[in-house]
Length: 383
Image (cartoon, rainbow, N blue to C red):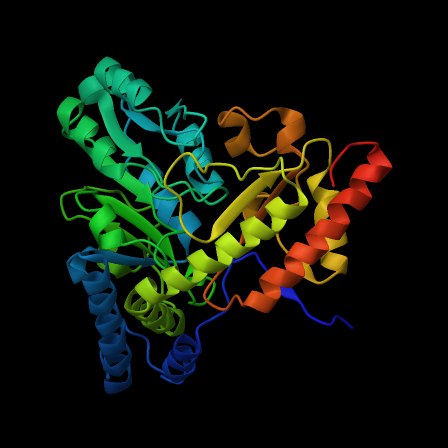
C-alpha cells in the first residue's frame, strides 16, 4: 500500500476526461454503421460528422480536411508515406518521434540536426532545401518534442519551405500540444497536422490527420473508401466522439490549465534543484511546453531509476513510451549534444491536467531518496 501515488507520465498518455468518457459510452450505444443508409446508420453518421465539424473548428480547418485515424503513429505514417513519390525527397528533424523518424527512413528521406537547445537548425534546413529545391516532396517538423517539451519555430520552417520548395507539403506532429499550445495558430499554413486523442484526455486508439485539400496524399490501405477515400475502414465512432469532446475540453480550459501546471512544474523544478543544485533540465534554453521536465543523472541508469520510483508509486519515464524497454540512450538527447552516459541516465517527468501539489511533493521526496541511493551504489556523487 502506498500513502500516495504520483502519476508524472502525462506525455505518454493522459487519464480520460470524464466528459469524453461519457461521450464514448453514449456513442458506443449507437448500433448503426456510419457507412450505411438506414436510420440507425444515419444517426451514427450524424454523430461522426458533428464530431468532425467540432474538431475542424478547434483546429482552425474545414471539416472536410479532418481525417480520423487510429492515432498519432498512423497519422504520421500517412502524412510521410502517403506523400512519398519516386525521385522526391522527404526532410525531417533528427529529434522526431519514432513514428515520423521510421517513416522518413523508410522513404529514404533526410534528417536535419538541432542545436544544443533542441531547436531545429534552420541554417541546415535551409541548406537542404536549397540543395534539393523542387525535388522536396514533404518537410516534417514536430510542434513540441515529446521528451523535452521544446517548441519548434514552425513559422520560420514554413517560410523556408515556401521560399525554396514551394510545392512541398509541410507536416507537423502536434501530438503533444493540444492541451498546452494553440495548435490552430502555431500550425497555421501547414498542409498536414497530426494529433492523438489519448494525449489530451481522449481515449487511446483514435487520432486525426488534418489534410489540406490540395495535398494530394495517397491512402496507405484500401477498402470501402471511408474518410474521403484516404482511410478505409469502419470508423471508431465511440473513440471519435470522445476525442472531439476531449479536444473541446482541452482548448476551452487550456489557459487556466497552463497557468496551474506551469506553477506545478516550477514547484517540481525548485524542489529537485534544492536537492541536486548542479542539475539543470534539458531544453530550457528554448521555448518549452509547461508540463515536461527532462533531467540527466549522469552515471546512473534510467531503468534502475524508474524501477525504484515505481516501487515507491512514482510513475515516470525515460523518454518516448513507444521506445520503452530499450536500453539505448535517447536519440533526442544525443542530438542535443548530451553524452551517451548522460543520456542513459535521463528521467522525464510530465505533468497534466489531473496533477496535484501532493503528487509533485511526493515525487520530489521520492526522487530525492532514490537518486542518492543509486549513486552511492555506483560510487558517484549525486545527492
